[in-house]
Length: 194
Ligand code: G3D
Ligand code: MG
Image (spheres, rainbow, N blue to C red):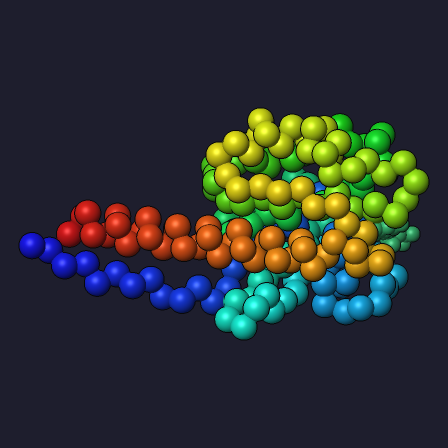
């Protein structure tokens, strides 16, 4: 009888990719995750990285990649080794929501992020006419594109910080689950090839 001693090592960190159109609020959010005050952002040329503690034994590394058209061509280079996608939309910008949906669909088609969990931040809820989480869910066709993975749409405001603690918690929970299932899968695969 075979014996499997495959206690998965404790998950320590996960890589979270932040994407979304330029001006959706990614950099403001990343800063607000760490600090209390809002800050003056500049259009992101390249990318920002920050590590945020999400609980005692879990760290999330956020990659905030610029959302301008030129940068979007490079998004696919950041998809490898990602354990979660944080997709940010400006809920008040109805004009660009369809453009954002198209980019979202393109990313999700990528093989290297098959099954990775997705949290959508329906940002700028403080602005008049901002679409709520249900409407963003519908417009982004979440149920269609994300049927094969964990997903959640969190309404938030990067300026006041509303909804951000919930968003972080959700990202951490999903990423932990994803890392564990990946480890179990790898262990089983190794075991089966013995
Ligand atoms: P990006 O990194 O996705 O490109 P930024 O976006 O973080 O640079 O934000 C773009 C603009 O949106 C910034 O304003 C920022 O202050 C604003 N913003 C971000 N989040 C919110 C929000 O929740 N509510 C409101 N009202 N504004 C927000 P400026 O004026 O500097 O362009
Ligand atoms: Mg930015």
